[in-house]
Structures are given as C-alpha cells and as structure tokens.
Length: 391
Image 1 (cartoon, rainbow, N blue to C red):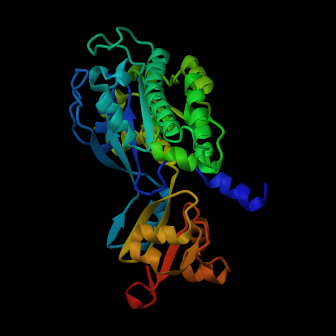
Image 2: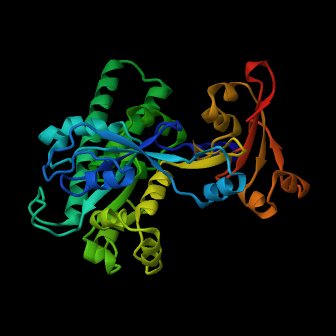
Image 3: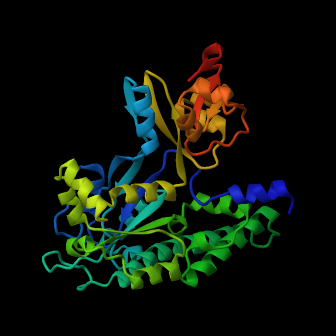
C-alpha cells in the first residue's frame, strides 16, 4: 500500500467525526452511576436506591484539570480563564434483556447511541442496603451482561440492514460500493455472533466510514470504572485480578480505574491540607484520573489561546488540522483560515515568553496542512470579516 494511502487508513476511527462529543455513564441499576455523576459535575440528579430512578439522561460539563492551563493562567493573569470540559451523560441502568425492551431497555439503549464513548460503571462495593438487581455482587458477570446487551442491539440492527439492502437488488448484480457495504455488515455480524465488539474488528477505511453511519454501540470506546467500598479503596486495593483478566480477554487495552464513590463524596468536604496529606499517602481522589480517561477515550486533546484578556483551553479531536482547530473557536475562522502561529507549550514554559520562543527559533507559522499537537499554543490568522486577524 502506498505511504499516503496507508496514512489515510490509520486516520479513520470509529465514531462521529466532530469535536462536540460526549461520554455516557452506563451500567446495571444501583452500581453508583448517578452518585458518580453527582461527583463529576457536583450536580444532584436522582440517586435513590431504585432501579430506574434515572429515566431521562442528565448531562453535565466537567472541567478537565490540567497543570499546563494553570501555569498559563498564572503567567498571563488574564481577565477570563476558561478550561477544557468533558461532557458526561448519566444514563439509566440497563438490565438483562434490555435489547428486547425489558426495563425500558430500548429507550436507554437509544440514549447510549447518542454518546460517543462509554464509562462502564461496575459495582464492587458491598452492602445489603443498596440492593443489587442480580441478587449478589459479581463484577465480571455484570460486565458481561451490559456488553451482551449492547452487542445484541447492534446485531439485530445490522442483520436487518443487510437483509433489507440485499432484497433491494435481488436479481441484479450489486455495485462495488454495495459489495463493500455488505462485506462490512457481514464482517460485523460475524464478530458480534462470536461475542466480539465491532471496534476490535479489522476494517478498511471505507468500511469504517460506512459502519459509522450506524453509530454502533459496540463500536464506542469504553473506560471501566470499578466502584469499590471505601475501606478497600483506603487500603489501596485495586480493581482485582478477575476484572483485569476479563477486560484483557474481552476488550484488550481499554482502561480500568478503581475508585470509591463513597470515599469521593467525603473527599469533597475536606480542606486542601487534608487532601494533600491523603494524596501523599496514595489515597487521593480518583476523579481527575476518571476525567482524563474519558477525555482520551473520546480522542480529545486541547490547544491553548493566551493573552491578557483570556487564557482558554479548546477541545479538539486528535489529528485535527489547523483550520479545524480554528473552526472550534469560530466557524468563520475555519472558512477564512490563513495560517497559525504555533508554540509548543513546553517551549513557552522553557523560554517564558513569545518573543523569547521566537528568538530561540521555536515559533512556527503553519498552514492548512499542519496537524495540531496536544498543548500547542495557537494564534490563528484569518480574514473573516474581510481583514486578516489574529486570535
């Protein structure tokens, strides 16, 4: 394969190609999803001990903590500071049989289809006061239930799509495009029947583009959140070998984060000195780690714009080019993009100012083909409104 074609293959990802993306909290009822959502956004959605207390999805924007932003804000002391955010949706608990409509399953699965990645919350904390919908605590069983429901929903959709499309051309020779689409559908169906998620299949770029039109549940990246008891978390225990082995066998490489929603609730009430001491002991808050894992699962990164008026972190999809980054600031900046002055964050931190970075030969002017790197400091030049401007 020519190098250019190979690079194009590598750039195509499952999911919707946009910057305004969200991650959804998914799991069985009473595993701590809504409590986790409350912690992430400091919002109060219903979190009572009732299987379907969260019927309408709630959405919050969570600040993405970043020491680079803190440094830039301290350096410029701007009138306004705007950090990057992660959009999180709380989705009601699924149950076994959801793909067939049990427990309002079809509605909840539709809500999952609207997000771009999944926080899969699984319960490891004990306690008889909070009833488990399956009767006992078994994290690996619970992981398998949710995964199976998502796969069954995808399988049903794809089988209908393939059958319907093939009926339309019965008696006629399919086009090359139709043959490609049928092959992609059949490959996905075979994966799902074999108990594998679509995102782990081997597909060509054009097949992924086509499959993305289905917004498949099993194509969404997953971050596993293991909600354990406060005592276990304070003792420094991990998610456990069984959960780790399950993830490695079924969705290899996807992150696992252990935390305690109960511990995090208490953490919010502590003063800064106490938090520093606990962090030094290795029992700090896991929330920043959760936020960053979600951010990366969505293939997001951010660039900065800086000045006395404002220091801001802008979220953009990885591999975005300079005009796309400009479009995040304002749609007209992408349409009328001229160039971008670029400083790497590390170069700015080392040299201390834009003139010093320029003197060191590290200030670059880049055109429309420049691929933005995480942490770039950009000054966008455009002629929106008829004249060249800088942001």
